[in-house]
Length: 563
Image (cartoon, rainbow, N blue to C red; front, side, top):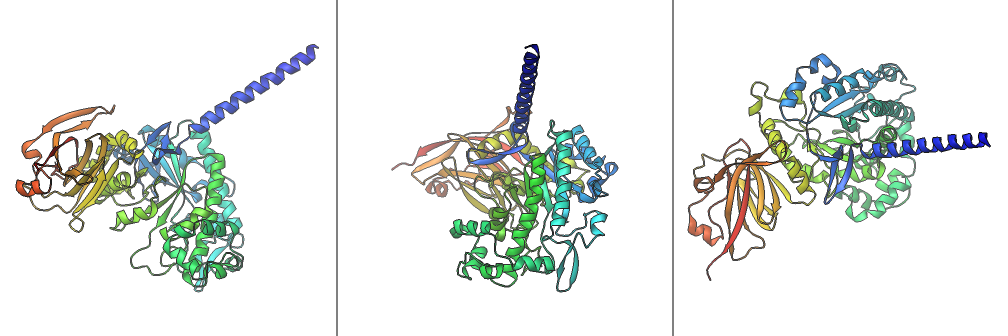
């Protein structure tokens, strides 16, 4: 009897310990950085709170030297960044097969923590910019086990996406990295997201022409893809839908049967296989440590005509339907934007309510404007210029346009994140080719324009701004070289006036600290009052007459025109 009682007590103790472990594990998992739908937006949640990533990406090789990075960490923190994107090369962490060295990762985490910065790690595994330069030497040297892609011109220094050996070796290394993060950073959450590969896709041809690739081309199109095409037929990207339409919307057959022949069909084939490979790697990592994962895209350049002139099969906008069907473990499809039509490119990647992020783009004044647009117009999780360790004006850090923008955005982050969930936020980036935009926000019709108001000294080359509707007839606005006017929406007989305008800042606790109460010259834009009255305007508006961004709070009122 005594033996039975002791045995029962041991079983009860084991059950309680297991229950406690299970509870703790589920609680811990819930607190991992994650993506969460909040209202009308999907946001990045870090330590239980929405997080706005004011980020910068290091140059490719910067993270491999702690000594090189030592003087940069304090500058990055002083520049109002809260997140750094840093590469983790496969060849550095797995110098010999199965032998891992995470010294680089540990140094990055320790130094980021010391400067109160978060990390997004970029896995340079099988491909970086479509090339396999970061594969370990033991992979590069064994071409029989780890085959390369081929074109009609010859073998490329690119691991074939059709090799399971390539895929599985990459996935094992990536899983080991995520396991190490779970063990060393699991309770601190310094690392908040992962990028899986970098700008993947095949160069020099529309598709791989190795024996493995030829065999895959002759196989039937996977049923999962055909189901996705059928279910989303009317909403597919126009180029992909046209490709499928030209074969009569076939729902069975080989890749040539369903998509036809030629470079565009071959690009679709490559996109599916790059997505499946990348998803396999991402899934292996998430089984170890379920951090949000994204892929970035090399954007098609104006001079590019055919796939292969840009990386064929990468997550370009016109084949994203294939990636979404093939890669369920990829959370975000993110454009790397180095073209002037930033807003247009973002619109091709940002879907309403879905997570959106720009991991590579410009710094400087263009970067400041881009950051406002990515966050304010497209509900972005954040923004990241490339090469941040050499892109800031280190002699005059406080005057750097991106630093000034990040300083303002860090103040406004709580308000931005709150209004993203309600879609009560808008942003503009203007220049002489696009001098003004109309915005419907908070029940009003706003016009944001380059600052040309009363006493303006010429026309600025660039203006940008962010506007939040914070309550009935109330707005927060931040701008540079910008003017903002208000009218009723829908248009009516009432004229909209400024009841009160004040400039100010938010302190570290989020409390508004008012500065000047603005009136008189500081709100006048146009003294042609008769013309203004006929247009239901008062000649007044918010004046952001400097390239230095500033914050204003405005309270509006209405008065009727006499009948």
